[in-house]
Length: 513
Image 1 (tube, one colour):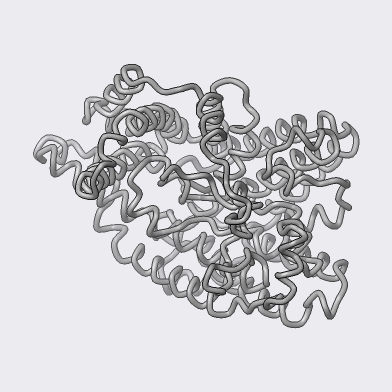
Image 2 (spheres, helix red, strand yellow):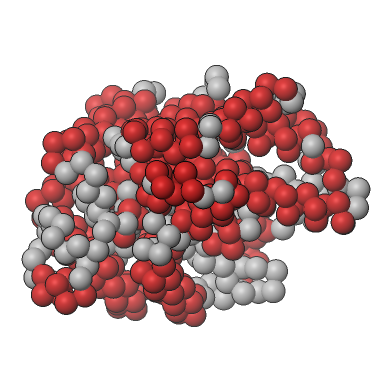
């Protein structure tokens, strides 16, 4: 989930308070949408146009990195001021505080202090907004961009720590690619955090990827020397135009779907007393799936449009496919078809809010010595905000993740002996995954404790109970033993390793097939 994507989740009453510019108030009244949402969409469309201009007229071959940094930062801050008014100053304050910490504390401990300070500042702003100003007003707000900036700040701190304080042999393959071996300048730091391409809706990217894009060599730190020579013979800078058109069309189709169906299946009906009392349980299950299905297109719209903006500027190139076509998915945040047809909880999470999942993996899961799954879900809940529903969602997610892992390790092997059995398993697990996801994220949408617990009581907490029993009854090897088994079982032939293998551990999470 993402706070920025929640910008499209508010009710369609234009009376929602807006701290940004009122220039588009007449447009808001005509189309009957809140002004903050109108400002957000218009700024993103302006960012898309600016991205094309940035790539064509401020190309690295035509201007210096200094000019590109300055223009990207100034445009980003202008869009932030237009959307959020003086609240946009929080972006500068949070970034400035953590930069000072990085300079003063040294590379040994800067990653810990930066995580604590950035997350605390974000939490303070979220608590103030929720409990002091407008509890339950789930609309575009300044803490959404701060969530992305928090990811960037903490990622940068950990990457500097990896590059300047840890030995090379202690780093994973992904950490070696992302490790930073010098302190960034103040301009580079603010450009990375506040550039116009990602300040409103992200997505998060690594500092090395961003600097390589600004300087005009987007994959220099990802390709090995042998691949570098061969890549120089191929097209060095493919055009993103077709990919941008496809993503913009997809995003507005998703917006149209959301506006058309979001009120047909309101999530609140799942806790309506008459609905619970008079509707058969199987019908409640179907309605739960449909009501949660119709909430996803708003996230698809926000994240796909944000990806298109970055691609239009030339950011996001990720090498070539086997057929020679360019890949523009380096910082993509979701894969829609993989989400809708996911056959496991893990596959769903691997394809939903991908950059946030990468961030959680890099700063928490890979580094936490004890109970990394629980620690990662707790960090995710803290990062999302102060609504109690978030914590109920992620606590439920811990239980379901453990149960899904146990089932996959113990049951799935029995269905792999024939294609028919595998198909049956996939159909059953698809249905189970979709219902489990819907059951888990209902509190995320309802926000409050009372309605969320009412929903779980109406289902007799059946998934909680069942998942706890499965997690306890079915044995699963500890994580360090599973990793050791994987390393023993995976000894790839270097001749057959594809060019992208060097950074595959970073570009997406490993999937068991």
